[in-house]
Image (cartoon, rainbow, N blue to C red; front, top):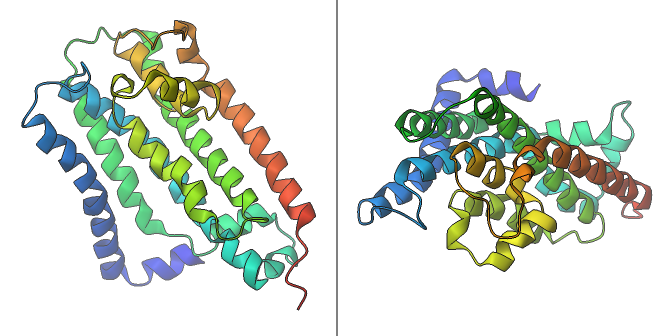
Length: 255
């Protein structure tokens, strides 16, 4: 329904799609300007940073396209509008995610894929092999699932903390921004935190380091580059349990 209503005004949709593309592209312009002054960032070249940006940006954009409506959960719990979804014979999570579905977010997906393709073309020092070629789409899919799971986990906390949407978004939107840059510019404790606590490093850092032929951060074995699918499954399972717990604990507004 939301897609049909959006496409009913094709010129307006085209303009919003273009604006979504351009707004997110300005994030990459910052990196372009930065490399206009320096030759490397944390030991990474421009094309390597573009590869990191493209993989993280595409994964996040896909998750945001599907689950981007979840941050409004706090408002729904607070005003009781979630009750409407509970009355319908369809999964509540699917309804909440589909409500006010913003097709314009495809512009962010296109922008991420464009930068990723550009980065891959510029990578001339990478010796491509079958495992590396297969790891790139696996990385994108697994990363999207991890981001989507974090969005569901964040929405689940809003059953109890209705005004904490900005806090939960710091792990998704903030995590996407962090993963666009090399792990070498961050403190080692932070890197370990996004590996062993909030597994954002499995979105692109660890598999991308393998593709780029770089050594993983100290204390992290190289085989972790292939764990992204398993981590995505665990994250989705945890998100599903948290969502069910939130629904069971929901008591409406009482009015």
